[in-house]
Image 1 (tube, rainbow, N blue to C red):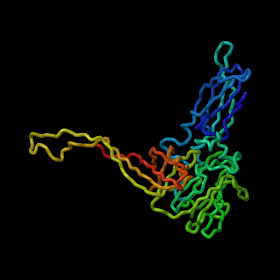
Image 2: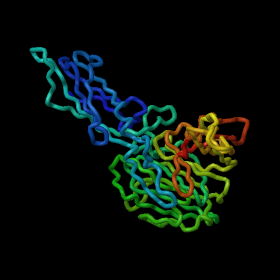
Image 3: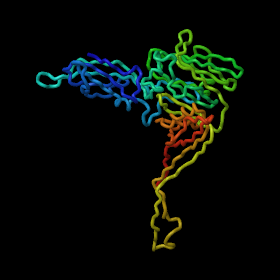
Length: 400
């Protein structure tokens, strides 16, 4: 027989990724080969897990094969984080992977020897991303066509965003059925204009994409356009709306629409980007109190005073009789600001992100967020005060 149950078309490998195969009762086990991204990731022997009438049932979970092959991974910046200060569309093949299994039945011959079938059975191909489920649902149908119309971007923040002229923002999405993006720009006077961008991709694919949508990314930028172009000066605009969809002579919106409000530049802000809870890029500009500090740690050792009987003086004031070894220097920033209730819920995902970057000197700098509590709701407050610490990597220093 063949596979009777496969994972969803788009599945989360944070949860079991399971297949079911029902075979004749003579099948005692199966050799299962797991393919991730088109390459063999590993093999294992699957034991019978139950029966269905006179048939043997094989339920196999391949979740453990996926952690080392799908982003985020140690030592490499995920492709979610696009080029700063210009328009970009990145194909995130490290974040989404195709998976399928090949099973070969094993039976006992008349002599009691194990015989492996030469007739492989192929499962359907599915795709996995490192995503939590949306709301209280246990599938990812909200994030792709045709299960959802409109479908959601892979972000925790589906509300209006704010961004100043120096800000970079990114939105990630599953690309099936999508080949274009629409930006509608609204001027300070209340008029609007539409720009449709050709994403130059095939609508039939199941890739994951990240598009740059920040003010610094799109104003005065170039792209392949179906209609209009990107404006040059953000000062004459108050906000713009972004969606992705399908273009074939005219634009059909397939995703949700997100509004980005343009705000003045501010010297009291920092820009953070992180790997989000739904497997997409997240971005936020924090405004408020920013305090920077450095912590120096080491082992202080007292040494005995050198003493030379043959010279005068027999010792010197500059003799090294106290030293510090195993020195470590840590830089950190303490952030304190007030945000809306919706933004507080969104920012909470930053605290447990496996990959965080701060933008400094127009570069991504790897950091992490110190363990902390964050209040995400307060029914007696109009906004919420949050405070957290950004920790930088250790810097090497000269050692004794």
